[in-house]
Image 1 (tube, rainbow, N blue to C red):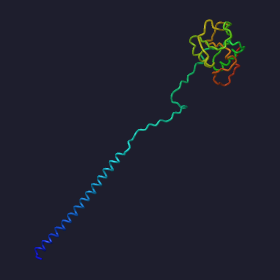
Image 2: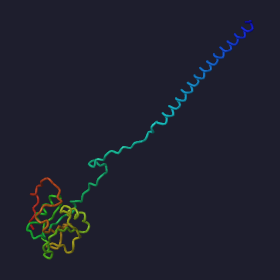
Image 3: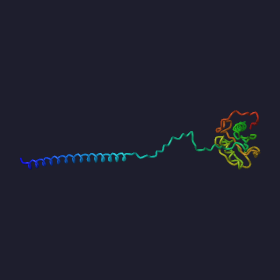
Length: 204
């Protein structure tokens, strides 16, 4: 073999070796780039998924149960007046002494009562109790009617339906019928025992 041939063969083998080396290097670079690109792509995909599943913060309003025994709404605690006027009881039931008993019972409920009397003869015996009032004392009559269980009220006629035909100082009249004669007051409030020796009420 000549020197030229040997040199040519050497250059051929060197070129082949260099070609394999370059090819291998390119393959490694391409593979590294592919891995890097894959890593970046996967990271972006994961970030998108995490962003997509971030729950929104919503405002939650909680309504607590209301205790009906502790209401914050102010209630009207006013009551009908029991003073500032005088009450007369006229017996129209035919039950002796019932007007006096009713007067005592009303006095125990903080009403101011006058001497009891009898109803006028023209009234006759009444089965239902009724409350009359002098104009301007409707609230007082309503208070008495409430204690009597919600009996009807109306303005007092002239003359008043009592023996004398006049109410005197009284501005509210209870015309006592058989429905309440000698009975407890239906709408009476519980009260402490009172000293009844200070007031003398004659039977009527």
